[in-house]
Length: 212
Image (tube, rainbow, N blue to C red; front, side, top):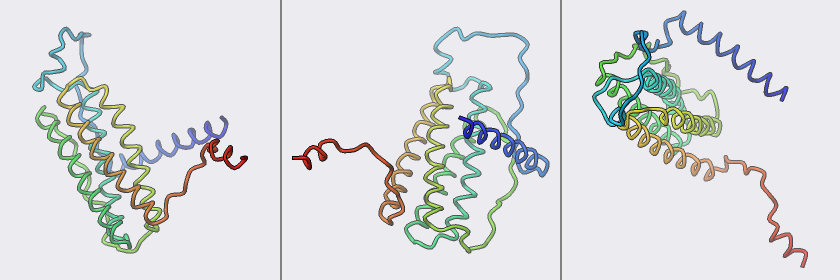
């Protein structure tokens, strides 16, 4: 527990320092600003969820903003990976991931624009023209594997709280694409001998058979 407590503390400190630095340099996109409500309102009808034309609530804006922001970061990262990957199949996989990130950004930005919400502009591309690999193909594939998992878990948790059915449907379809993209990556890792088998429970059936 002390180890996890220490890791959490370090992570929070790094997050704070990194966030303040990015804000100072004008790199981090600011979320849309919403006027503070003067009264408390309650949802009175199920039509609140079915109405595609109603204004986005704060939570939905936050979910979409986070989706655009994280996919933009992933887009820059995987573009860099695609430039320097040595294995042709891995390079092709990274390019596919780049296209998937762009597709997600487009869908989320369209929802925001349809609701008259302007998304803060981010700085230009941060990817250099270098083709010298900073990491091995194995490590880059594992990094994308982890990001796919984090993306599925984080997005699914956020999208559940969206109260507009059309947003939930579109983002669920995005999650499907991410899932199958992740599965494709796992197959490449296994094919190249890059996926270490996790510890597992003993097969009692085989142990009993050996005992006989």
